[in-house]
Image 1 (tube, one colour):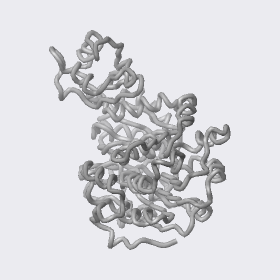
Image 2 (cartoon, helix red, strand yellow):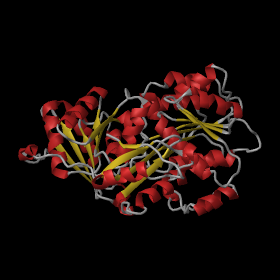
Image 3 (spheres, helix red, strand yellow):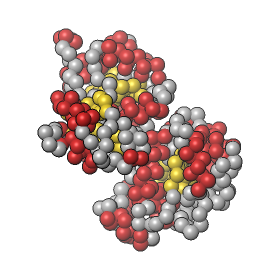
Image 4 (spheres, one colour):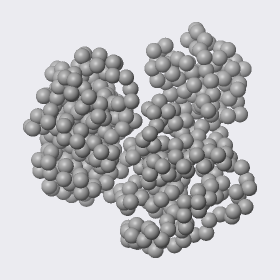
Length: 469
């Protein structure tokens, strides 16, 4: 395995690469000129056809790195599956597929197909019969299609494992092994991961050939993330500490990380019982409930998400006001990855972490990483427990129509802000799926907004709508 010289890869332009003109033109249209560190380190090797291991946190630009690599190599006139991208979750797969389609806009007739669990098989079977160039999916569902003979990987030239550490953590190793058996041995393999446990080293040795290692430091600017540590004796003390911090700081959006599904459920239930605006995200959720929970959190119509690391990995969550570590992460890199979700893009963020006597080893590792002693801080006054939690400014309306009815965001915005409607600045995010549309509106005008949708018309017809609770 060879390592890249990091010093020579800063502020390089995409135009310095041997990319297809259509890709370069599209990047220029998108306003992308210079590469991120992970792109500058990995793209030359990827374009050269070498196997690459890329280590970088979410938001480092790794999707564009492997996306440009596979698109540059793709032969559009060969209508067969040439690239496979494996992801741990459906949300990440959808996000990756969307970004690849955006990068491919300058090249006509490229077909990207997502194959994930949690959605019906029927439409996927139909899409597979029509063929594709690029498959993005989760290991379990891809195995299902392979086992039933609906999917052939004989022509694959590029395999990408995205968030490889989480795939292994979620128990996908047997599925990955089975997928490899359907792949040509002569192929390019790209592995991207936020952390680098020994399991990754082991799988790399099995499936890769002399990989080039590209590593981007995952530490965050200390000036933008304030870290606070609190010593707590037990879980009851942790729960009280969580409530005090939420009541004191009133974050518009915060994530509480728990190490187990059970803690995730317990913490969320306790907070909801005390009037906090909370949603839980864990592996036992049905896909529909998971999608709606994420949507409401992204819409700022729910303030707090309680999640496990696996559930929250790869999610497209914008900068958070706060991250709370209910328990310290088992791994220092995971801790850094967690808190990196707050204070992005130069904004101020805060990370609050709880520890006790059993965490000596984790605390020592963190102190070594941070280069300072971890000192117990005083929690806010318990008088705050007599106050009521603030509620989110926004709420989400669900409309019983979507892309299949040709609804667009502009139609919904126009209906809401038309004659005697609400103000444009009272409308938040709008998301449209095949059969549903979701719009965030200021909670104060929710009733008026709902009446505008239900009693008005969108594209010449009426739709049912309701406030999500």
